[in-house]
Amino acid sequence: MAQLESEIEHLSQAESDSVGLISARLTKERYHLLELAKTKPEFIGWKLSGVAVEGDRSGILSFNFDKGITKIVP
Image 1 (cartoon, rainbow, N blue to C red):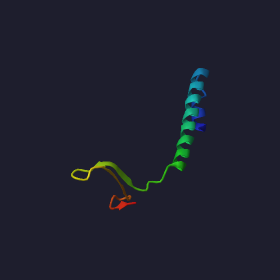
Image 2: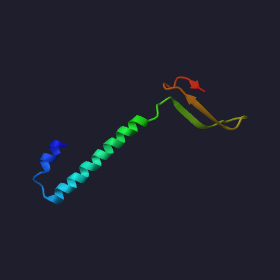
Image 3: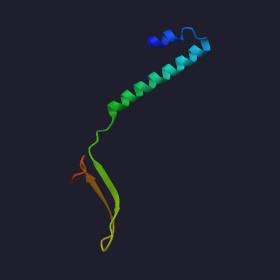
Image 4: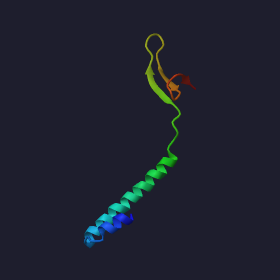
């Protein structure tokens, strides 16, 4: 931020204000992303749903798989 401030000292007030608004928006977005990273749900596996069954037994099935998609889990 200090480097940015030193680089905009020579700009007009309007240009300086524009850079300030951009800087504020970037800072706000950065903090938003940091908060999002804290609350991000942990990946626990894959889910396959809406599988149509052919033949005598009709219906829709759903399956849950582990992280490596190596087995079906409850």
